[in-house]
Image (cartoon, rainbow, N blue to C red; front, side, top):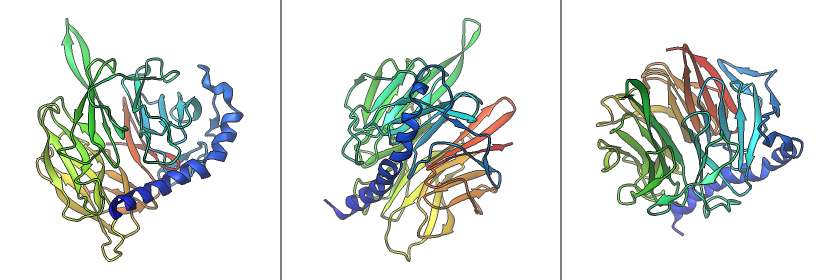
Length: 388
């Protein structure tokens, strides 16, 4: 095995092993004492009566987990889900006040989540032959009952090895004098490759698959800002020592893709993207270079709808491994890391250290009416209120 591939896998395996082994005791205890929670009653397993305050962020009381939990998704200010590498899916119906184990499947690694509404949703599994303990070869599941039951989807085309990202895009249209929505769901993966992008235009009933291996070695995140314009976070090579961070852009709904950003340093991949507007976007850039003299860390930024990108320095810290990124508006955003988190109030010109957990893989902005909540998931789940 090439040294770069081994290096990337060793780092991810370390995080996954912590998740699978050190977290197993707490998960087992929670499951053994809460088997009844898997019914529709949604009786809570966790109460957030006491929350730990850290600046403006609040740590929600969830089952202890060692390592990185990958995704969290809310369809309203009350209803949301999160999952992890133990094959566990948790649900809340009171904005994180209580969480219940809703679904479990040992051997599945819940990597990505996406929901259309409170009933129809999707769960991406990272797949086999990458992380230890993952035996489930089904890349994508669908639910039509709010997460009570999940079924594998049928894919027309090449089968992806696993899924790392799900994007749900809804566009309004006039339907016989009534406002309706057309929904396109995309799912992509995976870390380490190969790179496949799935698409559904009928709420996940049928799927097509697109092989993008000619454009990127991995698909780590997918984000569409309109029906036609979308982005993929990727990597130029499956061998991380040869890889450069990469962003692809489409302007025709995913029919064709073009490189719009590539870092000039090896040992890098692009992890997550965030677009607070159609014009302004950010991407987290992971660096795995063991040379400690290479310590500057960057995010990539666009201000013209992804046509051009520039690198924005974050901090000189060789130990920073960037993961999730999220922006409330073009100026105010957050960057999650393995051991350090950061916040910017000026569009990335300056960054300040903050604390909203470790291994923060995903940051979700949840807007409902006049309220906005920001959720961050890693080894723990954090939340904060925000205003534009």
